Image: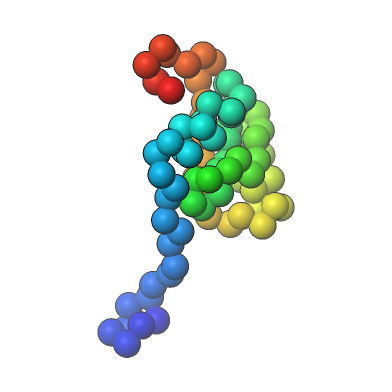
Length: 78
């Protein structure tokens, strides 16, 4: 808690949009993907949400950014 009695936590700042785009382009299609807190790297990939959460925790990332990739990217999406 801080001096005002409010609980706070450190939050990683996201990387620049170009780096995030490169990371997303490298992600496998039709999969659950966990990114590091700063969104600079893929830390886990799995078929289900619960599996990707467990894998990211196993790799030491406890607050991942989790997303589901599409079965194919639309031409303008990445």
